[in-house]
Image (cartoon, rainbow over all chains, first blue to last red; front, side, top):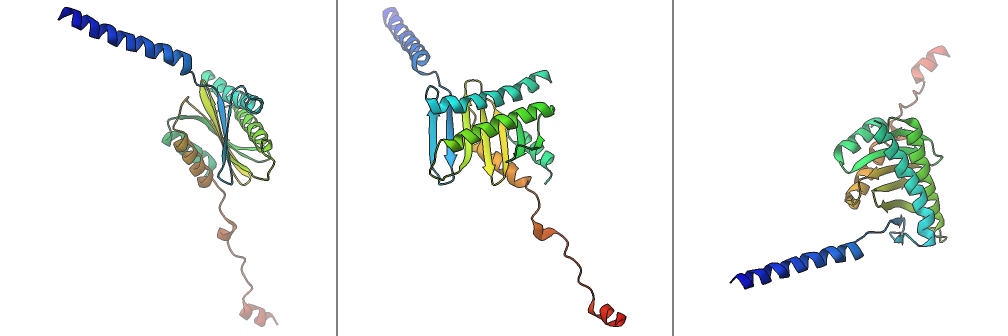
Length: 73
Length: 133
């Protein structure tokens, strides 16, 4: 009985540890920009591409500007 | 509805939106939830540059209507309707569709009244004109 309980606990701990490792490895979301057009189409640019780099910089500037004032309040 | 009132309603309705600014295509700020004018201008400037670069990403004549930039610590949204634009910042991982809906509603609510509601010019009364003759 005790061995069985230990086995179940070990199995559960293993699954938990595995999910943490997987999340840390693959779960990190990358910065991205989604652009919607008047014809209904959408393009998504993920951080690392040349288009995303030029779009993410003004977005970061905008977020910084808004947050700086919020923190001063 | 007044621009400031529409923005106040926006931040009251949407808890995910942290700050918002309404501005024109020429960059002039119409109103903002930020207390600092310089910060409102900087937010509008960043949003305008984001939209300008997004416009340049395609050369087939289509126009960008809305942009979402998802960053690690928050998001930036820009919505355009004609010559009027709204930019907003939100917490990370917001409900994107809801934020866009609220921003569009704010843009429409704060739109200037149509010309049809202007008082009509009074026509001279015919009788008075006849009396003078």
